[in-house]
Length: 190
Ligand SMILES: Cc1cc2nc3c(=O)[nH]c(=O)nc-3n(C[C@H](O)[C@H](O)[C@H](O)COP(=O)(O)O)c2cc1C
Image (cartoon, rainbow, N blue to C red):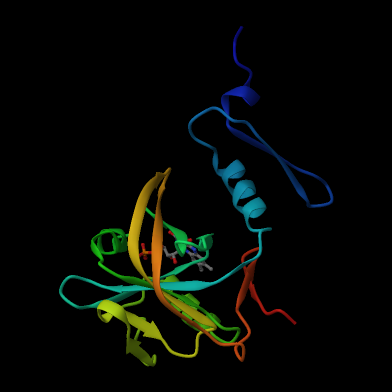
């Protein structure tokens, strides 16, 4: 029996007159088209997250960082966290080689910092207050929390690599509300 067009695409989407989109996701197939990819991103964007900056140093000591919202808790004992990084970024090789990295959880007033570290900014650390953490990793000041990690594991994740980190030290403050990211926009808890 020939496969229908719907069966051959892992994701198909329709847009209703009310502007809401409905997508049907199949469990087989290889690539998705541009329209379905947009619908998939939009659906994922309904999952509200915090915003983090993952930081480390290159082997020659340069601080690097990238905006990440795929962060999540994994395990309490041992203390493990995860995040994923695109195969397309040149920063991947540095995080794969790092002996330590930090997850800096941004506070509500730090959306401009998120934008700097998401863009191909020459030096996103310029003008920021940082201090050295374990292994010399740069920690951003005034964050809601930070987790200093050693690499525990790395898994293939399609067009991303999934990193699992073991938390060696952390800090958090109740005085800073977290920055929220939802549907492609920064928000705060109020
Ligand atoms: C709020 C937000 C969350 C992001 N989360 C991730 C993420 O979890 N993983 C990822 O690989 N890129 C994420 N990005 C994109 C990266 O920050 C960055 O733009 C991308 O890796 C391109 O970096 P490059 O200029 O080094 O290629 C996010 C961007 C924003 C604004």
